[in-house]
Image (cartoon, rainbow, N blue to C red; front, side, top):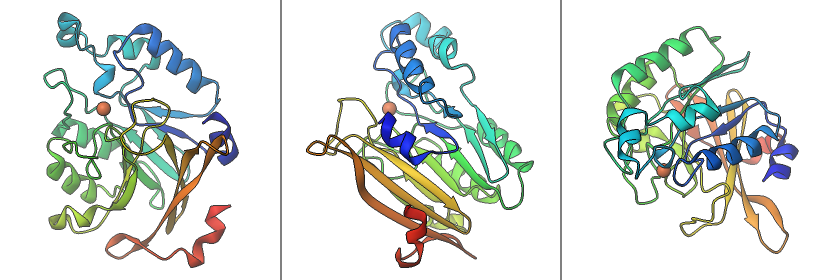
Length: 253
Ligand SMILES: [Fe+2]
């Protein structure tokens, strides 16, 4: 995974949660050391596994204490000339697996995007998905969030949790929202808890008005992460829309 990411040379590494199995300090330390070893700017959000499950007191009083000891802010921000990324924590103490987003979180993310350039690509990162949930439920209050993010000019929502990779237009599922964002779903990056597909990560290449998403999947025979799937999208008056790849080969380099 490290070699594949180094080869792609991304501007920023996005990790959409579930860094640990049981929110233990030793697990967080190991995840942090691994991610730090890539020496890249990072946007990391917690997942449901990053909240203590069996320590009930900690689960309710300080659910993110261990996470924050190692990763700091649970709703981080990254902004450069071309992209603006806002992480949102969708993990909750009152559900074991499901997640939720609230109005304050949505407003905060949209405010953070307000200062980005008009041509900047705006990206929300959550653990719980808005689509492609791999049989799991989508994040609670998804319809409210999608409507607000469309209004706020969000281009992509990048999520995890489902263990099944995918990408597509938000308008396929959220027809009332008007302009379409892209919903991008990460598979299982490094864990052995797989759900019918190999370990993978997405390389998202943005050359506005085009975005190419290349999935790298672990290829046992080759002993490396190799390209397994490509999605291409173009910005239209109705938002992001899937397009043919013929004119986008330069984005694959
Ligand atoms: Fe999860």
